[in-house]
Image 1: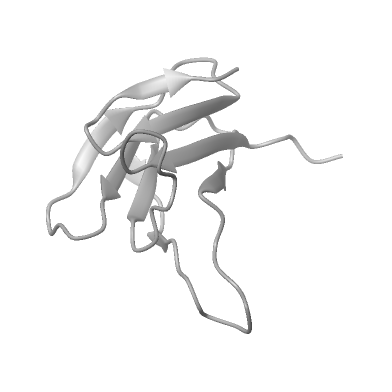
Image 2 (image 1 turned 90 degrees about the vertical axis):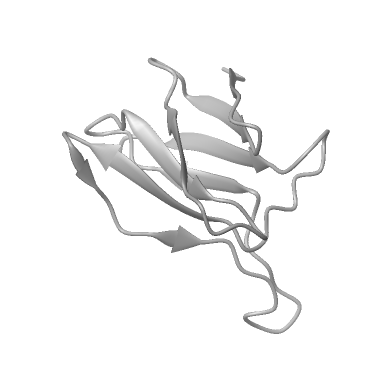
Length: 97
């Protein structure tokens, strides 16, 4: 009965989806949410998915990402009405559906 979230796929470069080490935060109503990090090896044969689910209610307006190997945060707008989108390290957001 829960409302489906918004799927965000982090893409490091041309088709490479392994954004292990990326940290992101979503903004809703002018406030930034908790930071989430994509990890690998936190358990036996495990790693986080490149697809992350962001709560859709209230709708996030921006996403801030610190990509692997960098210390700077990059802020991107969340495409309005998107149910799924990809976000590239170069800053482009593409709606999938």
